[in-house]
Image 1: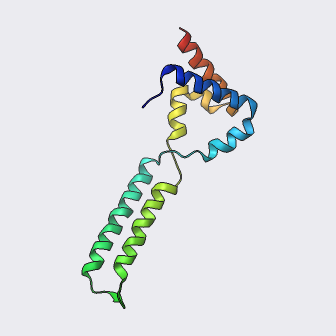
Image 2 (image 1 turned 90 degrees about the horizontal axis):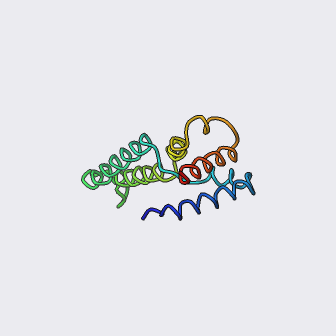
Image 3 (image 1 turned 45 degrees about the horizontal axis):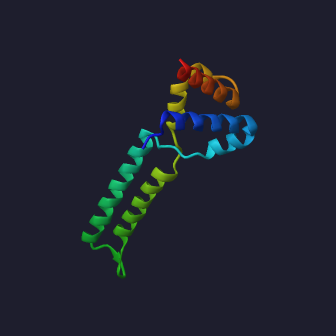
Length: 130
């Protein structure tokens, strides 16, 4: 459920106050903030998951085994697991680009983080005040 305009405004005020008080903390936290994986990363993960699934199921039909262990199925499981890890832990993209698109390209490309956030807050404040 999306935030109301009042809640969004309050959240932006709290965010800007945090940026003003402790920019070093904010920069360290913003680097760790998870985002959505980009399209290329999703395609890679989907391909690994499908190949792993094919190996897992195909390994049950192929008589390659060490003792009771189906080797091809085991490899398929690890490929699927790798696909999940690629999706969950891979480099992220898109979150910062989407935010900078809203705030304007010129402000996002120059200045410090706190000045960019202050500009963004001022723009939103003035847009709401009209």
